[in-house]
Amino acid sequence: LLEDLTDGYGPAMFAIHQPTAFPCQVAVRYLNRGPPGPGIGTVQVIRHDGNGNVTVDDRPFVLQKDGVTIPLGAIER
Image (cartoon, rainbow, N blue to C red; front, side, top):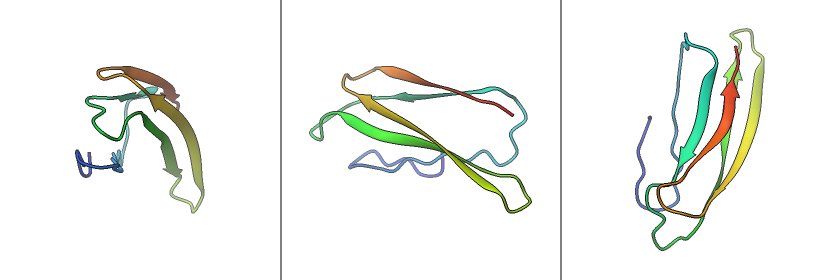
């Protein structure tokens, strides 16, 4: 977790610089919805292959209840 923003709209960012375990499971969890209401966003899986090629895999979500976790699939090698 690069920075944990708990007040406002985020963003929350994670970085895995040298992943060793695949597949990696991706999920989002809504801890406390608060005044803003539903949590609407997109997880972006951004990959750089070390040769100048970048890919972006968007995984949108909507969270409406506290304590809910939504699986967003796996990241394959």
